[in-house]
Structure formats: structure tokens, C-alpha cells
Amino acid sequence: MNQFAAKEENSILLNAQNVSENALGTISFFQKLPLQYRYLVLQQLRDLGGSRFFVSLNHEEIKINPIADSELKEKILSTVETVLRRRIPASQELRIEFSHPDDLHVIKNDILLKDLPPSLGAYSLIIPSIKPPILVIQIKIADNEWLYLGTILPPPYLLGEKKLISQQQIVTLAFTTLILLLVTYFFFDWQTKPLKELALSVSEMSIDLNQAPLKEQGPSEIITATRAFNHMQQKLQRYLRDREVLFRSISHDLKTPITRLRLRAELLDCNKQTESFNDDLDDLEMLVKGALQTVKETDIHENIQEVDLLKLLKQISSPQPDKIKIVYKKVALYRGKPFALKRCLANLIDNGIKYGTQVVVQFVDSEDELQIIIQDNGPGIPKKELDNIFTPYRRLHHDLQGHGLGLGISRNIIHAHNGSLHLVNREGRGLEVIITLPRVYKQR
Image 1 (tube, rainbow, N blue to C red):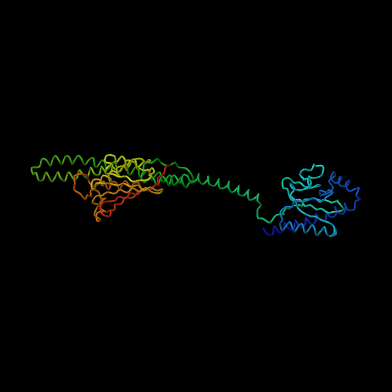
Image 2: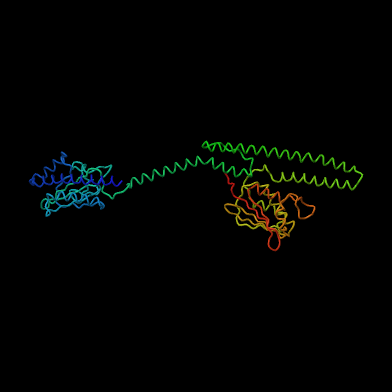
């Protein structure tokens, strides 16, 4: 780049030297002409175009508005002056300057070049597409008589500071870059949209296995991944459907032999054995009912939708508002399974009221997760039982209500939403249930 700039500078200085030598010839010619012929020759030059210069004889020095100073400009002016002073004595007034064509004064100080008619030869200094600076040489050849020469240096036109790229190139480059970035953005957005949908579907599949298959679109790699995901989803659906049907069939079929065994137990002569048989059959029937309840309560086939948990909680607390206090600021809608979440919260709140007298439910909402804290003033849970309390049929009390399935079902529902459920004994008295639900399932 430096070599190229140096070569251009040498070319410009060489052109300036040649123009200066031509200017010397024109100046010498006019100085030698008798006064009465100067204007006649000047008119012929304008009519015939016999000079590379715009020439005029003025009664005063024309004030030139110079272009911005630069190192190269000073070198050119110095070269021109050096050549001219070879024949022009130092005592003779000489003015050399560069001006922009739109701001160049000619003939008189109140006349601009662009306002001249074509007949005066102004066209020789105007190149509309480029508008290079104009070199103006003024020399006083007599009292109240100045010879005015204007010309354009041959290309390359380089008078500003050396720049890697011009302002126009910067604008063009910026515009081109902007267009390229926009095209690239929309292209990648179009290419990655199927990948985003695939990632969202993978996240939601953990709580909504029955969602519609993904449309196979996009690049070949994403189409292959989408097809594999759809096949996996179909296999899981078939597996769970077959397992559920088998489980329900077994549970249903067990009712018949249980009923038959009850009838046979009544035919026994020993009342003690009959009572023992009935106790065992009651336990077996409770296991069957508990198994069916577990499958039903988790709502495997419930669809995901926007859930107003605050409204849902108010419905749960409406029968006994004096025992349930809700603390919240602002709770956004949550995407989940409404009936499953309602059963989960109802189980936990009923347990708090059952073993205490007051329940406080607090919401802590953020962009990434929703936290629900349920506090009661009951006896709490022994520390050694905190890990075992979620085991099916595990009970700490021996009342007639319940089967020991509520906490396990509630935790399964929260886990199905990719959340977590923890139990913590409060200081003093009571139990605290902490539910954390991630906000990763957004509306498509």
C-alpha cells in the first residue's frame, strides 16, 4: 500500500512539473504580445480551444478560496513555483493555489466558474463526475493587469492526506456490510428455526409425550435429527401406552379373584381365619386401588397449556379461606398440566391443614423459575423420615384417611414438569414444602 501511494505521489509531482512548464510557455507568449492583441488572441483561444488552460486577463487579482492544506498539496505548489521561477523574476508577483471547482472565482471576484456561459471555455475545468481541484496561477504582467491560468492536473487526482479508503468507500463498505449482515441473519434464522423447534420439543417432551410430531424441514442434518426424534417419540408413546394398558388390565383382573377369595373366606368355619383372610384381602385391594390411583393422578395424557397458578390456588383455598393465606406480588402464567398441578397443590395444602391449623402459601416468581413455598404449623416430619416419606404407602400416622400416596404423587407431578420438591422442618414447629418449577416451556 505504501509503495502504491509513493508511486501515485511521484506521478502527481511529475504531472505538476509538466503543467508548470506548459504554463511558462503560455505566460511568455502573452507577455510578448502587444497590448492591443492580447484580448484578440484570448478570444481566439476560447473559440478554438487551443490551450489546455482556462486563460483570462483581469484588472485585479482574483481571490481564491483554497482547498484544505495537506502535505501533498504543499509539495505540488512548491514544485510549480520552482519551475515558474526559473523564468519569472522574484520581483514579479506570482500567486499559486488550488480551489474546488464549485467555489472557484474567475474574471472578477464576484463571478464563479460554474456561472460562466460555455462560450468562455469554463467546460475545460469542469469534470462533473469527479470534480478534481483546480490549479490556479496568477501573475501580474502589467499595472492593473493579471494573467489568470486555471487547469486540472492529469490523474491521479490525489491532494488529500493519504488514506487507506475514502469516505465514499467507507459508506459503500458500511452499506454492503449491513446488507450482508441482514442477509446472513435471516439466512441463519431460517436455517436454525427447525433446530430451535427441535430443542423446544425435546424440553417439552418430558411433560408432554403426546405432542404433535415435528415437521421435518431445514438442512439435511436437522431433518435427520428431527426424524430420529419423531421415531423416538413414537416408540416411547407405544411403550407407555402398552405398559399402561397392561397395568390397568392386571389391576382390573385382580379384582375378580379378590372378590372370589372374600366369598370363600366367608365359608370357612373358623372366624379367626376368616378375619385374617379378610385383612390380607383388604391390604391387597388397597394396593390395587393405590396403583390405579397413582396412574390416574399423574395425568400422563394431559396436555400442556397456560396455567394461572394463582387462580388455581384460590380455587383450592375457597372452601376454607380462614386456614389458607396466600402471599404473592405478581405471578406470570406457567406452562404445565393444570389438573396435575392442582392435585399436587391440593394434596400438599390438605396435608398442611390436616396436621396443622394454618397454611401459608408464598409465590416467588422470576424469569427462569417459579418457586412455591407451602408452610404449616403442624408437628413436622422426623429428620430420619424425610427421605422415606415419599415411599408409596409410607405413613407416619395411623388414622383411617389416606393411603400414604399423596406426597409421592405430588413429587412425581413436579418431577414430570422438570421441577423439584423438597421438605424442610421449620425452626420451632411446622413443615415447609419448597417447589421449584423451571420456566423453560414457552409458547411457540
